[in-house]
Length: 171
Image (cartoon, rainbow, N blue to C red; front, top):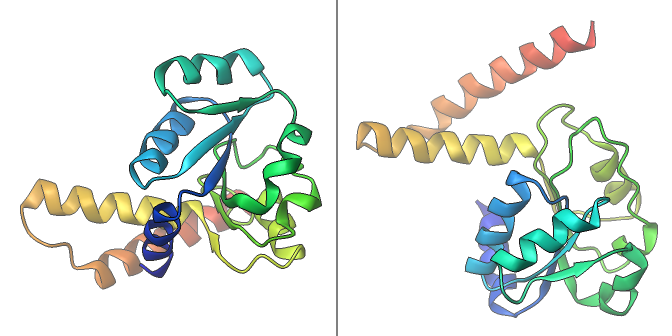
């Protein structure tokens, strides 16, 4: 919950967010970040996919190379990776100098290369993909049943299953 409150506050400051990726998950992320007041910047290894998003989201900034963002680094409050967890995402260390919130939507592996690099560079506000999945589950439970989800029990059951899946994949 604290990370979501922090996102709401930071969005109110009109800061930039950087989204790495340009697929369907990136599109959902861009839509949500714009709702929170962020100015999204998109980088994707296939530049044309990022440009296609710009046509649907006015005000979106698209960059061809990460070095194009060097002048904005200190204003980037949030970096979101929407790339697969298995991708060896190499975000340059300079992007972590001002300790942005770092969010990786991937759930497997839990500790992605992106989040590991963020931690190595001193970033403390990390959001793991499993946290996003839990919140989606809470909301779906609320909507489907018409009752407030018992989050503590839901989270315990989901995380237990998640750990079982992670262990089975590591064998």
